[in-house]
Length: 327
Length: 145
Ligand code: SF4
Ligand code: SF4
Ligand code: SF4
Image (cartoon, rainbow over all chains, first blue to last red; front, side, top):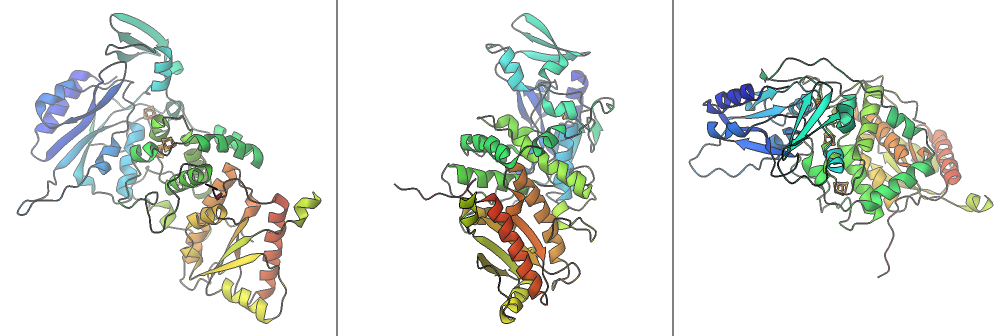
């Protein structure tokens, strides 16, 4: 577990530096077990910072989502660093962003958190539906201790753990300037058994499954907005000329939306699971993303966000790429 | 089943200007008969084909989509078909994952001299799509207000 005193001290030190503009971390939420992102601009705010298994958000999204305000005449743009706390999976988002040259490495300062897993808030919510006080989740050995309003409960870790953490390949951040704790050994692996299972089903079966899901989508675009890799200024989903999909919420347009979103993340999605987490109607978006992840790994031996020197998957090719599907 | 075999599919084909379009042209000038189900859209290179074209065609009434370009190494722009191959492979696998039969989404290499191959390709695509029937998974429907 990350030592809070150490975390806050380091945050204070970082935010006091001349060349750092802002620090993005986590702070307790207003009720229940949730935490929320904290945007720290001075040493005093750093006292709120926490890191617990409730820190599910991928803060890498904020680095690319920030609106670049026009600079006033005679003023220089603020090019100081932004410091950001990342878990192992989140750090891959940073690597992938830099691989795509979204910003240069020296614009960010990475506070890496070796991670032993975070909870799935939906599971926590289902188990403790009416906690109104601000609660806390801590990991003690293999148990999660949830305390709120004077009561304390212990739950085995695997009961509340997020799905992505049960197949985490990179618990220790792959990029960092400061590491907040000792490195964590890889404790799980990913065999894509869930995707393979789906692949075996018949076409009619698969479509029946997805038809129900896509029909439910309300096109709120939360899944796109939260994604650390969805940062194009001119998004294909909002284009009017050409209009790739209509605004109407119906099966055809929804399917087009899901195909476009998922395809645009082919070879880019780093599997942080944020898209699925924020979906208000519980569409299993990871099952779409994971199909691509499996394919790019199997076909092109490519894993997004693991090597900043790798050129982006779809802007390169190899002469010997597979072509057994070509007539 | 008899009903299904009467069905004549709409096939949209994206052909590259330098090889496949010329190949189809050659089939025509050599008087090779090939199925008339195919609607050709000429693009400058198979690398020009945005994978979303496939989705869009299927949405707008195509029962099958074919992308065709020069053989590897023959691309007029040196590398366009290599990029197309990667993009297409992922898209085809993904559509299959959603329940769109792989027979609907095809890719071929047809050179400017392969008029006869063009005929074979079209026949095969047509047979494949006939087998799986009309595309109705996520076809755009006209609403009657
Ligand atoms: S996937 Fe790995 S790094 Fe990410 S939250 Fe889970 S355990 Fe931590
Ligand atoms: S698509 Fe989902 S899992 Fe992939 S990077 Fe975006 S938010 Fe994360
Ligand atoms: S978050 Fe869910 S409902 Fe909203 S657009 Fe994405 S899939 Fe649809």
